[in-house]
Length: 175
Length: 218
Image (cartoon, rainbow over all chains, first blue to last red; front, top):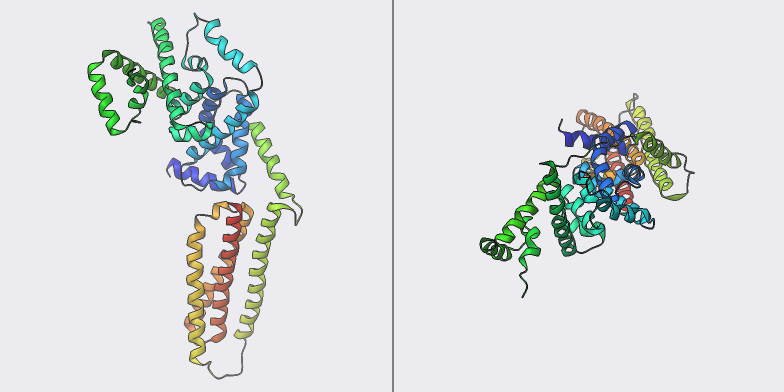
């Protein structure tokens, strides 16, 4: 049985209350939801967001109609949940303060992609993660973030332009 | 006027430009070494991002998620009989099951009576048999159409309702198959044809009810 067919079957079982089938889906998609949450949120609130995504998925399984793969459905749901979760965290000053300080506080530290992305301005970071890492289209990003598709394209270009400098620095240090 | 292409290189890279813009951008790239270098760096960033592999968090959040989803299920299971949407679904599901059940009890009782030795009676008029056959065909066709339509929306039904629906349809289908088998043995039996028509009608009602529920849920 293909992975997609077996996921479809597990989604059907989970929709009927089978927790073990849901756990199998969770195990398959945990890493990608974790990546999405940690890049969209930094480190703060990631675990809460992951829980929220899977609990919401469990309660909304009846609405999964199999038009797309379960993974695609879950990722879309995850983006919406994480964006809302981010909104709740936005009032806390620690998020932006941490983000601004990362690059300047540790200039000699080897930057991996996550650290480099964490230094991007909020809008550029979210669009970069959703487009280049997660593979969403600009129209989907625009709908999830409440911006225009042209705004999403502009933010992506900004993010890539900033990141290429980090990449130069990182590769320079590695050599 | 400022050259627009440096700001549109990402769009070019992602194939987001119109064919006309794309060919203009390509012409520009042929003549601009700075933009060619920028494009190659943007490409590098894009490839770099695509290579990034997700990893599993530690500690595993499953135990807490499991606790929460089991919690989330409880209020539904323990819902009072006629309050709220979930309860209405349960009520409809019970109605479907009960209606099918009552119909089957009556039908089986009548079938049992029919199987007992009986006084010979005059054969039913051919016209009545033909009308019942037509009625059964009509109900069957309508139910099949409705079922095709409902197939894509079944997921919208509450799992308990869906399970009850499937159970009711299976019982009705088995009963209809049995009736068809007996009609083959006794094609002019009015009672059997009547039951077949009623069981197909019952199936149609169950599907309509489920269709309405799925529309309310969507």
